[in-house]
Image (cartoon, rainbow, N blue to C red; front, side, top):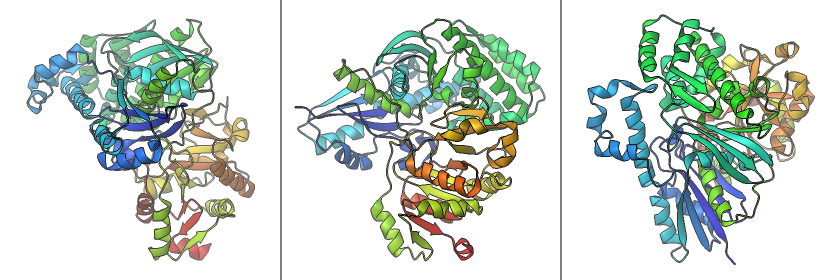
Length: 578
């Protein structure tokens, strides 16, 4: 009898990740590399860090009789990548050539060649460390290496993670093997490719250009800032007309004009405009484009259920509008729709190939798939840290923490397994009282050290969703933005964005009983079933990974209290007043 394990690697040069799935298709582990390295996006870093792999394979695969290592890109690369490498376009000298300053699609040629150079190196080096550790730790166990289509990895992660028996799936990102768009039909655990758009046309590249035009850096993943800034602006008709001339939808295809792109970008740079209006107009165009292509997809008549993934599925502002702006009845977006999620897709694809008669997953995928904090490190901190204001509260943690939150304390909340994906969903969170109008500015200035316009998320008990939001939809992974009812906005001003919306997280007991229990107690104290929730990090850093990370952020920011499992740590001034 075999006991096989599947290790999935996202070897993309950004947002690399690793996942582990057992023979029954159960997800044992999934985590982005940035968490372990504490390096945002883990640019140009392999997912299988050699110093970490021994621990992971022994923890999750120790009983293995066979191991399959699955990659999120096809091994056979497109001709243009080979040509560019031969032509020396990927070298430092090549990138500095003056002719590469011109635009090719919405990015400069040197930017595209740098991306391709990084990607080529990342794929070549991915798996080397893992192979070394497997050879050393399990020398007698057979190991198989498999390579899968990038967009298919996105689609499997998303479709298998949903609770749909049948759906249509669209992948929208910057680029896959041959293009930026792929369309699938999902039924009974099987995926059928309907269409993969080939060519350099890319809505993802366009949003990266919006990010640049607004003064942000897409290499750092600052597209979030465009979404946060957009509601402060207004539509610029002249810029919109230029954008519409550059790229358009035809059926399920993208069409672009390189001449219009080059002339249009030069025209935009010559115009006078406000950054907030650029952000608004860019988000407006993105939404119009997506609405059109999704409406065309729906007209195929294959399903009322939509699964959306790829990097562009992180656009929560548009995600919250999909069911109102299209004829789809239901929407699913995974917790990790960007390239970190494809590590899980690769592992699931390898497992499904070995078990073709199985019909895929039958329940939504948990987001809590990452690392746990070291209990030994936590105990050492309690014992040797010299920290006098510490309480062990296995029976009364919710009550005590809820009271602190109701008094206006900013609390770090760390429980169980880390979330897989970019959003904190109650296990690696910073929490606060949403009733305090000044709380948003306080956290941005004292804790996150980020721009004042950046909003915070409302985590809401599911049973109160319709009471607070118009056209309420479950938002399990904080993946969509919905509009607060007008008469409810004054109750929770710290989590209401300037346009009256909030990127909500739906909280249910069966999804996260500890976070649900905390919000329940806060509701009993205040009458408000919502907590302000933001990721446990400071701007420019990943979400915390270890006890040491949590303590570091706690002591170097204006946080008032820190909860790790059943321990509560209080700063001196808070302890004296509580």
